[in-house]
Length: 453
Image (cartoon, rainbow, N blue to C red; front, side):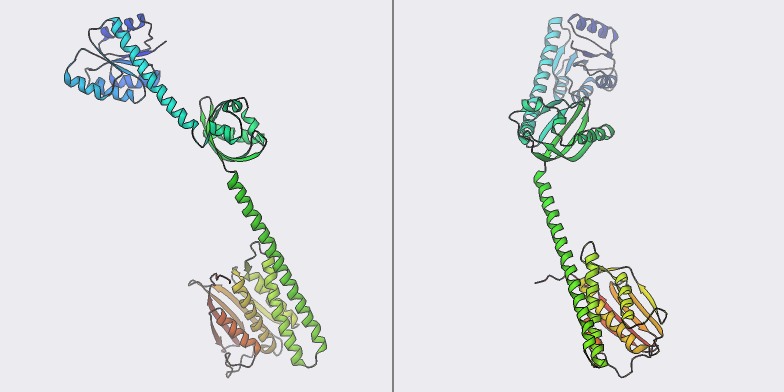
């Protein structure tokens, strides 16, 4: 039965009109006496039509009220005995669905109401057709199901994406039939119940059993859920290819660092063996120092091999191990030469770590050879990143110190010449303090990535 909300501030006229409407077969669930009350009752009762006077005793007139009600998609028919040009023009601006001038008979009343209802249904039907046509022609798969999994609606794109011959074939299925993992549907339903909306990536099955990666966005409705599906299979496949490629490169880098480390260790072992076949202390020392340099580089590659990114070396761990190995090679224990480390827990790239390690190796080796004739003293190692983004390395001992006349740039020592060359390679600056033993202070900028050719 068609329900009509009656809006009339004259009680007697309102009751008479209510009786006429009910005699014509309409339902009148309520009567509003003013415009504000009418708007709230339209929201509450959702009538099929509003029959209203155009003029009330209050300031909120029927035309203002009608504009608000029309915005709620409810047809409005005006009823008035004030038919003048000004009122008519105002009424037309609100685009009413019907207009009755008092006095009127039942035939005119019924005819005006039925025309207004039919006009409203035609407009709604046209809007629905336009909407459904746009949904059906959409490239995005659209679906609607109830909470039990019955498929209530799908568009053509949905049928095409899942390789069905028609929409009707999809409607014969249950939504659970599409999920590779049935628990995925329970998960999305749970999220919908909690948040009224859900989004996620799932593996669904096409009509021929092919796995399709789908992005689902869904919203809760009064009788189930409504949502869209986007095929993201190509994106997922591309991501997987990138992951596989990255894994392969990581394995290759790991193998390279491992082999380089092993080869350097073999060279170190060969140098160690060669020491047994040479005569003279100077020759033995040359081989020993060369072995130390090779060992320094091997330790770098060992740290890179152990690094999850194969690109950075944990410098604190590396420096402590390097210094310990140098002292061990010279037969010096911690009790003989006290070691003080002030090394920040930084990670540096191989372009910094390799020359840095060789510099430390040469300076510590130099201290072990010349600074402590009695093999007693203190060795200090400091490495920090300063506030101006400069690295600072300090290697100091309290030994006998370098002779005043030695110039590191012209000294006839391979080790110190190598230090000078490596500092220049880092674009750094070297300072020497001879006031209390020997202190080497080296500052240099963080290295920037340089493309290899």
